[in-house]
Image (cartoon, one colour):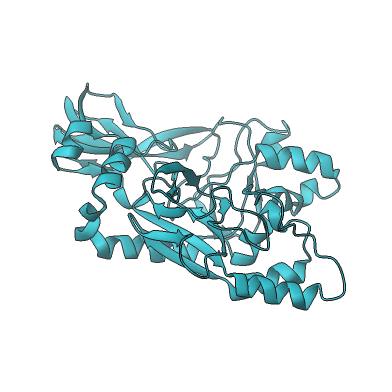
Length: 349
C-alpha cells in the first residue's frame, strides 16, 4: 500500500472540468477523495452529438479497473466535476511497477481477476483468426492454420506467473500474447525486454523460428494476461500432415517474427476487396486492434470525429438512430465518413 501511495498524486478539478473523457485510452486509477462528479455519455441529439448525465460519483468512488490495466480499453464514459473535486490519481505505470515487486498484492482479488479473464475468453477473436494474423504463419495453408488453432490452448495467467521457462523440458513451444504485458528474463534472471499484446514469442528455438533470448523466462507483468500456446508436438504433427510431400514455408533457422498483422481483416471488407495487395498491406500497417466492452460507444450519430473506419473482428453491435435500436450484422462501419462522402456519423454504434 505504501509503495502504491508513493506513486499517487492529488489533483484538484473545478466544477465543469473533465476528469476523464469517453474514448480516452489512459488507464490510471482515480480515487475521488472529496466532491462529486457527473458520469456522462455522448448521445445523438437531432443533428448534433451531445453529452447527457447518466449517474453520479462521490467520495471513495474509483474510476477505472485494475484488472484491465495494460489492455488499452477506452474509457466508457466521461466523468465531469460537479463541485470542487479532489482526486487521488494512481498512474497505471506506477501500479505495474509495484506489481513487479509485489505480485502478491492481487491475491485478495483473485476471484475478480478470474471473472475478468472469463469475460475476455468470450470476447477475444477466434484462435484461427489470431494465428492467421501472425506473420510467421502468413504463408502457411489455411487448413494448416485451422489445425493449429483447433489443437492449441488459450490460457489465462495472472501477475507474477511464469508463462514459459526456457530451462525446462518441452520449452520449444510458440506463444501468442493476446492481452496484457510480460517481462523477458535471460538465463541469469536479468531483464532482457518485454512482450506486448499481439506479439509472438518463444523461449527456445522452435520449428517456426529461433527465440530472441534462448533459455529465457517470460513472466506476466500486468494483472492478467491471455496467451495462446502452440506446443511443439502440435506444430510438428500439423507440419507432417500438411507438408509431408512438399516444402513448408516455416524457417527454423530464422529469428521468430513477432509481428501481428491485420491485412487479412482489412482485405475481408467488401470495400477493399478489389484493392491491390500493396494497398491492403499499407492499410494493415496503419490499422489498430482495439477491444470494446458491452455498452461502450464506437461513434455517435451526427458526431464529427476522426475519419476512421471500424472493421469488426467479432462481437455484436447495436445501431441507434431516430429513437430506434437494432442489432446489426455488418462488419464495416464508417466507410463513407472515411472516404469523405459524408462528414457526420449516420447512427450511434
